[in-house]
Image 1 (cartoon, rainbow, N blue to C red):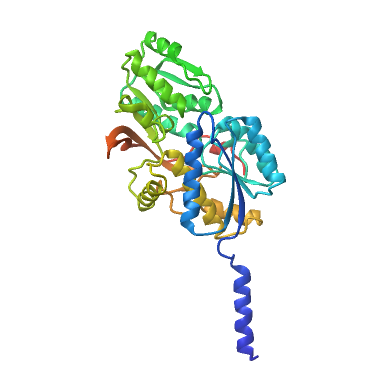
Image 2 (image 1 turned 45 degrees about the vertical axis):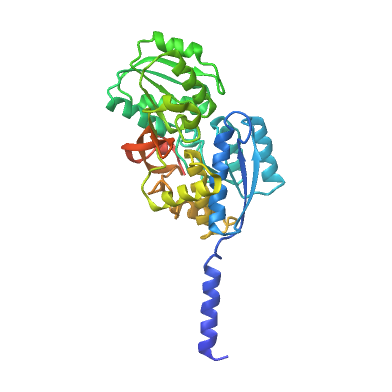
Length: 380
């Protein structure tokens, strides 16, 4: 072989060695809520995630899905088995912050990546952040901070606030109060999974409130809104997408019309990736996607984008590929802050009737390029 040919062959070999193969393989364990209270949230995360995998046409991800039934002890058992027996490289899927707190710290301590499509407890965003923990959705406080700022703009001065008594509920009320300038007519923590709100509605009635803020995701929000309508109370409501999303509106009915809520995503968000996602999700599942479906979809595309750049067995390289977030998010611009939580716009939405169904329409922007308040406490 001539010198020129030997040189060319050497250069080609070096190039192949230096460049990662397209779509390295990874085993991904999804632990999410598929039965019991809040099952619709987990179903939407799973469906959005699986849609992205199907659209990619790639075999890079071997997905293992299990139901946590919203039970922390079960989630811990599943995570342990997935890590030790199934040998997963990445865990994802958890909806509820109390389950995330039970699973995530031990997962990342074992060198396994956890990429959250939903729960973003404050404890994991600040001092207890981890280089192997990424949140592709939001930090819990953020949408509620936007709701507090929106309540100010709407002129509310005496708001009654309420959330379930678990980490996300605590973060919700903390976030709302951080940006709300008015007085509080009352502050309540309800039970997680509660369905009877007669006592809470009576307390709101007697409080002199001029408005209500609540964080009640899934069936909790549906139950509250049905009972609120029957009570005859007519106070304006400001909330976040978790309580007025596409997963809940059909069951709430017309009494949800006009409610103002905040979100980093909306079905009417005007970008090509979102429009394609909405069309594909409706075609595949016969329904309009929710916030949770959009987050599952983005999480899968984030993982796929990293696998195109690095082997998950090379933790440092894969971590940098995740940090790059080189994918087209359905929410538009997407980047990670230093604590691996999103930098993103948060919108103000109104529940409207459109195209034969209740849905949300963006009417303003609460925050641009929002970064959560815990980022400076994170040392990585």
